[in-house]
Length: 276
Length: 335
Image 1 (cartoon, rainbow over the protein chains, first blue to last red):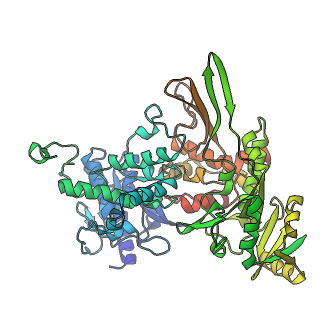
Image 2 (cartoon, each protein chain N blue to C red):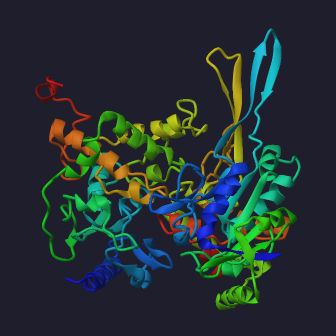
Image 3 (cartoon, each protein chain N blue to C red):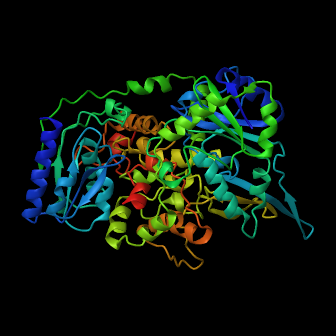
């Protein structure tokens, strides 16, 4: 199916959902002066605003927590992964959700380059969608080869590499705020009585990123939103993939796949964890 | 006075300047450009400047650092001792600053001059010279042509550079700028060169919208529209931290572990933060995301006009290009 056919089919399905009164709001993408952006469709008359193409970069699962009604959503593999994690963590309920899954061959930036996290994505096809539009695509084998370049650096260079990356950080909090899994109402990074980042020096910036990385271990679904949102092009995708690699090697666990899967970092299995 | 300089000579000119001044130029960095202090040991100075459109971090960072120590304090034998922090006295030149950012600094001047005058800002500002580089092409997402803040400039900078092919046409806009035109790298400009610039100016469509008109239209926006935009907003600080005219700050003290010394820090704050308008006791007049977003837009397009008679936005387009969820300043101005 071509992109335009998928788009037409998407509009048709959403129109039906509204007419059958199965959803109150639909989260999708619309066109704007500056490319594709998320939009919220409230009635059947607005459905024609919906678009679908390879530039639909945002992870829409982020917005699910903002609605307390029956929501429809269009989901790529990574969006669906985030939805699964949110369901597992009791943040949203599956019953109130209608998922339109679209198999994904990677998302492209405005200058037509594929995003780096998409190159290593192993979660291209919908798994829990109510309806799938478009043909399923081939999944790639899991690989962490893209990390080799950084991993192979001598420790001093690697340290310098990350310091240089974090030096550019302006602490705009976009990476935290756009992350669909950073949903805490009160984030410890905002709690000045616990950690005060207002001085904005290098150690604050390093602390910010490394502690976020630890908090997302075993939860990050590698959608790459943090890296895309970052105005300073910090290689956050590589940082979070490294965390995912560690989790995979220790537990053979990948988040965002099975709704019944248990996150190994919040469960204790005496047999498995003895050697740890 | 108008003169011109060969493009190949720019590096030499800047190196000569850097003997006496701290020279800041756009430097290629991570697929884009950032303003950085010249590294005199490097051979290629200002190479690739032809590709420069604008930096992500506005040059205001040299006047308003992301955080700075205001003073140090300590207590010795019951007496409070305050030690001021000296700001480097060396004069600075920002070369390549775009007209929109020059206009932004002029706005900051107005705001910072209000009582109480921001002394540390003016200590930096007074020793900063602006060598503006006019734009031959418009940046993506910029709308300076509608606000009258670019792509050309007639006043505000000290020197004005215009790309006219093999040369930059250079005009001094202040007395301070005038003296640099005697540098040996410059040649006399003739009529032909001026015509080249005039042609460029004519070719770019400028249609300035009155700021009264913009701020009046803003009031017509209904609640529902604000709601729909606020639902999309992720309340990060990109639009405020990278805005060339945003100047909000906050102040806090840090104490040493012994509690008898410390320093006071001024840091750039963002009105998109939940804590920004929170009062002692926990009350918050702008509790909702919608209210904070509206405040940001109103501040730029209305409060500035009411108070200073000009817009608080220079149309550089940074907030538009860098917003991860496509919130677009142009919609508030044009629609």
